[in-house]
Amino acid sequence: MVSCYESICRVHIKPTLGRAKLQTLTSDHLRALYRDKPDAALAPRTVNYMHVTLHKALNGAVSDGLVPKNVASAVKSPRPKKPEIHPLAREQARILLEAARREDDRFEALYVVALHCVRAATRTQMGGRESGRRDARREAHALGDAHGLQVRASQKRQRRSVKLSGGP
Image 1 (tube, one colour):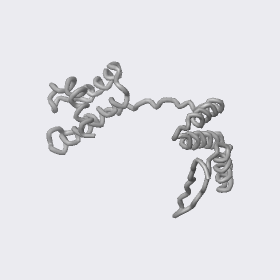
Image 2 (tube, rainbow, N blue to C red):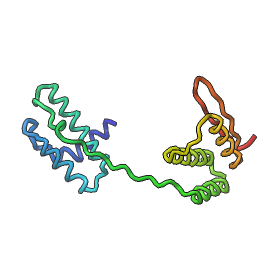
Image 3 (cartoon, one colour):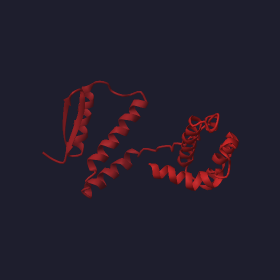
Image 4 (cartoon, one colour):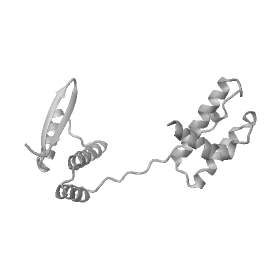
């Protein structure tokens, strides 16, 4: 992680702010830096890393008495936009699982569980979730039966797990 911060400083921060004196650095300098970087085709997360790096470095400068305040605190951290997730349609999910089975894909069980979790999350968001452990167990067994997988549920120390295997 240190090399990541070093790279951010060397590639992004130093070329823009490297000549500015620490005492003359203002929040406007940082805003301009953040504003210009997305135009340079940088990922929003990288711009956020730049802010975090500057903020921590300036906190150190304040602690050492080099500057009276951290100008990065006055600047709102750029937030990366979260991409909208489009879950697979029922037909697409069916095609994926058939292909995984046909190709004997070692991640078939993972795909089954992931699709089941998305389905359960979607149902929960829509307010139609069945309640109770019995319903969850029944769904897990039905899911395993539908895909030729053996399902064994166990409870230890208040944790529940569902074990999937390819056969008996």
